[in-house]
Image (cartoon, rainbow, N blue to C red; front, side):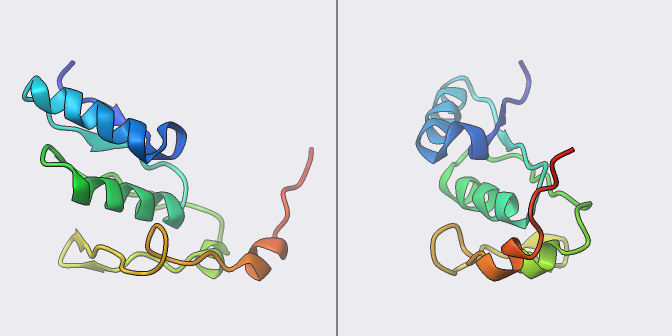
Length: 106
């Protein structure tokens, strides 16, 4: 394995940190897997800020057209994600916006 990819959303932050710590013991950098939303971007950013062996940041560039309504878009300056400082993961979820877009069952 060259670069362990850590899935913060599925593993949870404590387990993701344990994986990063284990990888660090073997001189491996980690990459947070970010595939789905601004909220996952914020979760991955908090993880990346905590580990010394962070390599590169994956950011989701596609999504539903209304995703900025639910969670504010991340602040990226000169190609660098600014660590969010809001509550929790760094941003609040607009639950009313989320309710306007329920999951459609097929």
